[in-house]
Every structure is written in structure tokens, then in C-alpha cells.
Length: 323
Image (tube, rainbow, N blue to C red; front, side, top):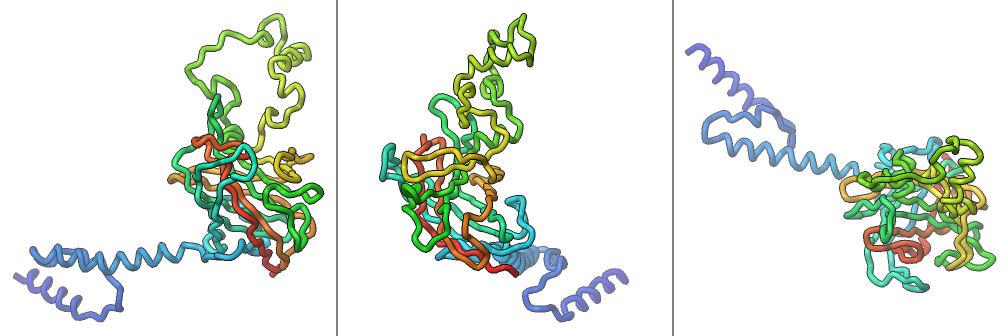
């Protein structure tokens, strides 16, 4: 009897205590009386859900509709998960068909790519994210890689070249990332056994005795069975990085840059790609200045490769002034 009186007094004190609007306590989740449990639980949910949604909304970055804003930071982010991206303005770059030159893409796929950018005055880092229902990172006959690219004018001038990969004498610089190269950079061996685990290999002549593994004779024999690498084809070269720098002066003029100075990393999750690309600022660009930027996305499962891609037009790129 005494214990019952004590609980009743405690509940009376609890109900009488002032409570801030919108606040809740775990007492609210406790069914005080049978029959009142359901109503109490729903009341608690009505208080919790708005708070949870508000917290989620606060983590969304601000939106920049008209341009890509490169925020100035003294330390550049190195991952797509860095908390800095929560406050960097996000621009949604609409993509259109590349239907101007052969081979054209006639059926639209990826509708947009979300873009954020940070600069330290020497480099610029882009965080790119786009929806993709399939993860295409395994090469093979008729199989193509998911990929994304960032294009900037080689020279920062008010009059930019055509967005379709520049013009003769007015080049553009392209930073290209592919899922196939990312998988290799992450550790998957670039050989048949890694791509087709059930394949049975007899032998390659360059691996047979009496050739000694690693000897000049053995390496020369191996090159004869890899003709693309033997002529220094950069696409067939052993990959150590998922990013490649390219230059172009119009459609059909794409070339590998003398050397790749960009870097990056991509990961797939929740039906989306998240790719980080870092590159030096283009010639003439500086904090507080402006130029233009364009993007392209390839969806491998839809046979998109080379010129068959979704692309953007030029989009203004504003570099925030140094702090």
C-alpha cells in the first residue's frame, strides 16, 4: 500500500513539472495505464519525428542553383564523407544527350550530377554524385565502365571555347574517372582470372620454361602477347590510379595529357556513385575569379562509352576569395 502511494505521488509530481514546448522524455514512452499506452506512444512519436526530420534537414548542404561555388578552405577534403561537404553549396548540373556528333547517344539515361567544390587557391576538389542503379566496373566484350569527367577551359578567359570538348587552338582540360580503373586501383588484379574466376587457363608461352620469370627474355615475350602495351597505348597500360588527365580541341581530338597530375577516388553505395576529383586550378584562375565548367557521365550498363554520354553545357564556376 505504501509503495502504491509513493508511485502515485511521483507520477503526480512528474505530470505537474513544467516541460519545454516540443521536448520529450522517455517517461512519455512508458505506458502509464493499460489502454493509454497506444495514445502515449503516438504522442511521443509526434514529438520525436519532427525533431528527427529537422536534424536530417540540417545536414543537407545549401543549394546553389545558378553556378558551382568553389568554397575557399585552407585544408582540402580528401574523402567524399568529409563533414566539410555538409556546408559546401550543392549545384545540380542537368545533363543532356550527346547527340551532336557520331557516335551519338539517342536515349537519355543519367538526368543530373550533383556537384560541390572546394579550393585552397592552388587546387580545386570536386565532389560528384549521381544516381546509377547498376555498378559497372568489370570490363569485357560488350561491357563498359561507369565513368564521370570534369572539363575546364585550359585558359581562363571571358570568352570560353565550345562546350563540346573545345575548339582548334582553344583547348579544354578534362579529368576522367572510371569505375573499372577504380576497381583495379582498389586491388582487383587486371587479369582474366580476376574477372572470370571460373576460367581455366592452360598456359601462356611467355610463362613456360625455359624462360625465367622477370628476365629480359621473358618480358620481351610477354610484350608480344600484349601488343597495345607494347606500343605504349596509355589506355592499355597497367593502371595504378583511377583518374586520367586528357586534353581536347574539339570532338574527335581527345588525347592523353603529357602527364596526369589529377587524383581522385570513387565509391558506390545506395544506388549512387560518389567521386572525388582533385586537380590544379586551370591557367589564370585564382581565388575570387570565375571561369566555366562542364560535366559528363557514362552509364556502362546502357552501353555508354566514348562519345555516347550524357553531358552538361558550360556552367559558371565561381572561386571564393581567400579568407
